[in-house]
Length: 424
Image 1 (spheres, rainbow, N blue to C red):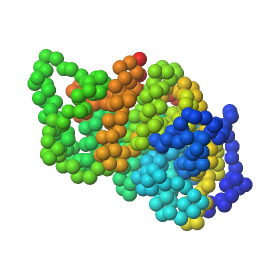
Image 2 (image 1 turned 90 degrees about the vertical axis):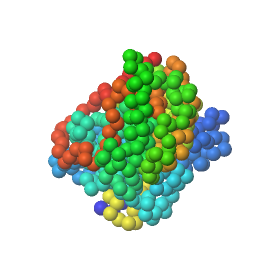
Image 3 (image 1 turned 180 degrees about the horizontal axis):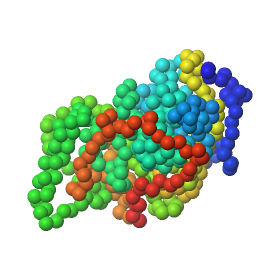
């Protein structure tokens, strides 16, 4: 089936209950941040609109091939977090292949790289990151097809699917327990160890350092705190010489940081740190929303978050026609909501194309986020705490069989219970 030529007249749009507020930005002196870019509404309104419209917008679709042959052919009511995960991953791929400054225009469909990215998300089983693949892989995370995902679940599923995309060659890391471990990420992105983790130079250096630390602290083990990482811990040179590390090549990094920012509501103490994360140049936004109502947040303005909303049901389209019309994958206007209306379960996303990008990100996080004594959203460590098990990167050997899954007849909603609560 070819793409419809006029997405407004030919497509059928339906919406979930509640207002769908596609409103333009108000004229204000407040700066607007969109995926790390700062704008002024007074002077850059056209550029803001262009930036927003250029994001890939994935919404509910109906009429796609049944998932698993007998499963759902529409994801309305249960697929919103899956669509938000698609949007965040698509932004990482756009950064990877087209660059952050890329802008969408009516002729963009002729760009082979852009078309290839878009085709990865088509609603069919053969696409790497289709609703079919994400829903099916969710079984490995305890989710049946048709069940609602939380932010952490969709991050874990995307991590497993990305290993099949050799063209992009992304390294995906999901930081758990409110902790970002720098050596784990460098091991993932730099070492050419494949499945033989014992050959990873970074891991070996970390083991030698930790063994020495254990000898020094026979009767007492001190654990690194966020205040330690804000001072000399991350500024000191590595324990082993860089020359002993097989640098290889840096695989572009997609970093997810799942967090819970409160028990039932987002705690106000995290607001400034959250805004800072969304303003960093490595930001690819945040997935979250309201209870069982997910959005992809791409920035903020003042005390409001800016987001793209997947809660629009459109007819399925396919990318079989080289002369595709792709307007339905781009939204002209973003939506906004108050930061404190955000459900506390979120996942931040960052993309680092080079090791220097990652080092810059860690420096900014250390300066503006993890050094807060009473309101750090998460911690940043150079090495794994001594009481943690060894880091095991996800590889193809560990993949589950996405063909084995169950289908539920009705959408089921749940909360993301896999988070460790952040201390206040």
